[in-house]
Length: 328
Image 1 (spheres, rainbow, N blue to C red):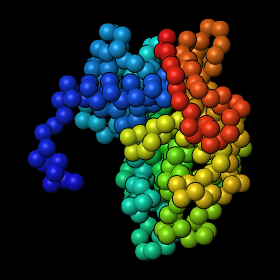
Image 2: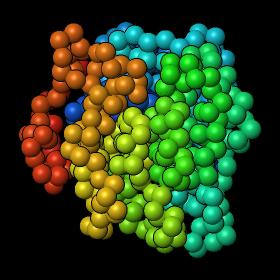
Image 3: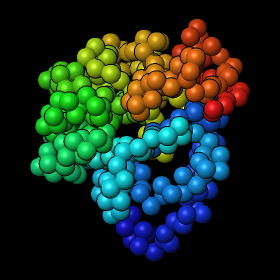
């Protein structure tokens, strides 16, 4: 992509404002009232604050800033903060690449090559920077697809002071491939498993081409994780389908895009699947006292659906439509 990026003009604030407003309207159309925005560029925070002040933000936001942003010092100087619309208290790292490109960092080689993926942020860098961010009150979220990447991230999280871990709620983003030992460490360290069930819908259809049977056993271990730690649900949009009803349906069925199922023993219950996108998501964004449930004193954020997800079949949940939504 670099030859193309070299000749494309950079996005302007007007471009990004238009993209943001279109995206926020689309999310509201699914019934989403809050989004966690990972890899947030520092130089676009003022744009979001302007939209907030004009009443045009559309959805509440929990921001995770790029750990390598050239303007990060400005955010670090300001420190973590939150208001009713914007929570700016997270830092985002990348530990590896993606599974489909054979970039996810694995303990053993891929089935179809001798490669073991790529390491983006080295263990040494994460071991140094992540505890330092947590000590300053920042929530650290790290992209880790492969099992070796997850081990490296959990090693870094283990270096955070125990009180700082409790206060900052570190997140391992995707948690797609995990050894038994690392599943247990989620609970021991109090790490949030930030899941995107729609990834399984896409990846499980072809994962057998890239991974051995033993490696496949480590994929998408949602039920195992639910027994030891707090989960949170998302989509990884714009990489994946942002429709939460698709994610909830997949979490309940483990169905993939080829109409097969993948390790159904790792299904989540209906209540767990819904909670991923409600109270669990709110907890992952430090908003459990005001979001994620319809309760007195909470934000008046709601959506009206054409389907009752507490009673409907997974197929009907997949086809759920939002009839109306409101934020605040």
